[in-house]
Length: 132
Image (tube, rainbow, N blue to C red; front, side, top):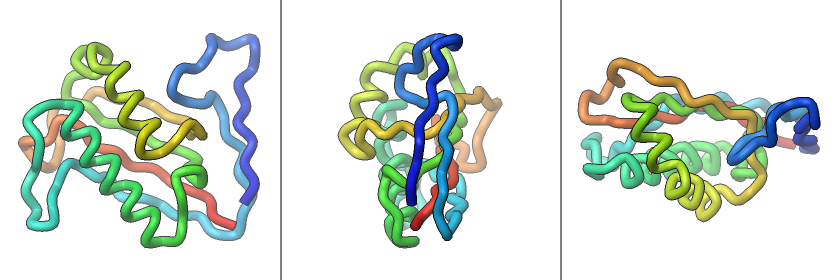
């Protein structure tokens, strides 16, 4: 797969995301929403950063099982039950992202939602990747 991250100078500088990602490959992997569920189906972590780390780990585990790597991510959507809290923890969440997924940022959006399927969940991530 080849990817090109596009960040036009006419737009505000992106922090922790890319404005556009052009991906060329032969397989598209659609990743279901992942929360901080453990293998027993229980939400883990009491804080947003703890849940974000587990949800991202789960997303990357699904991606890896499909043969992809974090660099293959073309789009990720973050659903948060409290965007103000997400912004408060943005630096820490960015550090978690870089530790687990690196610095090849996909196109991203953060959306506030009233609640998630797993009632204790504070955050959910879904997305898609393009593999060679």
